[in-house]
Length: 552
Ligand code: G6Q
Image (spheres, rainbow, N blue to C red):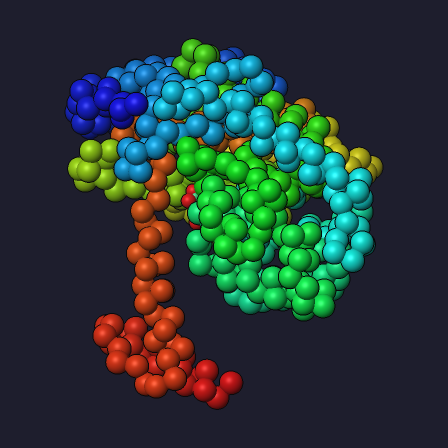
């Protein structure tokens, strides 16, 4: 099926009438304060909120009026957002530069659904792999599957990087409450030997299963780690090659490389080229997640994803959570000059969620040309970052409250805690509410002075306020809620990328460094002094490292 064409017909972004109107409008809005917006509309906090599939989004503390929202929605229409959404769900090759369909939504489509890629309904394939993962997980979790020496598998190590690591790590941490506490789960990604050494230092190879997760099965870091794991495992199991079959499985799209590595393709869990790495935590790349939380919880997570997929596909744009989040991020970036978005989960289990979102958002929308290769003349993807509250409050929130930059925040919180300890949760939620309130409304000079603050100290204690934030609340952090949250951000990223008219699904920016590293490895390892043809800085750094290496 050919690449969607609707974007071709459109005007460049900055020439669209809604964009131009937003530009003019933003000059007026720049002067409005959230204090006034709330004072003149007592219903604002209820009105500018929307709930879908159990996620509640309060976006009232953004610097927007009804006119702003209408113009943003108009921009979405003028940019053909609806057609783009449909094109994705129909399996069109919207990843233009890689000529691929983008169908992570098929990974969570229920049995019986039909999503056709190049004439083939892929949903039955998805469910076949899910069934294979389920059978395998049940065998490991019940103890039926043992290691080479007959001992049960107690340790599971996922080896992968980027999209083959960040999702599994995040999901494991996020859903640890639901995990099998009898087993140890670790994740090795970095080619820095420390990562592997620390992951295995207290483990028995006879009880350890490695999942080598790599879509391509050629990624340098993963292959170096996988070979080290193989040596470590063999060394602990008497060097018997047939032990590999019991201690290694692969998640990949590349069966021939998997078997070259020595893993029997029947121990391989497949996925497809229409699943992008950073959109793959709900594919077989989530095998470690399923082993940790069990197949039922994994399927509940998929149902959560699917609920938001359906909402994204069918809800009117003005009630559509991912669309609103995407439009607000775009408003803050392109019209209010924000450069980052802070994601602040008030839940310790979500401690790796900001790291996960960094890849999802920045690898997707960190692009400088449009789908058609022309240089953009507007900002694209903002920098996403964050830490769990309340820890961040005692660290970088100072800059958000009183610094000179505008940093929109996404606060995430849950109604019911998974660990009920005295009134911890009430204190936690009081903090998330207080932070959003303080950022929006601040504290005026008059308020500070009225507290008896000496004149010289007043400026230091003034909080300007007018700092935008979203608050995302849900009842409880469950596997289903996690699926919903991830899908919310996936589709918010999609919305932004569709309007910016960029390819949110390629990642050419990671290539150059990879190629250069491959060139430098032999120069570093050469037994004779190599001829170096880099710039003078790179040459000197390589020589310095060679000196360290010789004295090591
Ligand atoms: C994600 C990227 C990238 C990828 C890693 C690992 O969208 O494509 O982060 O996931 O480079 O790739 P492999 O799974 O092929 O090892």
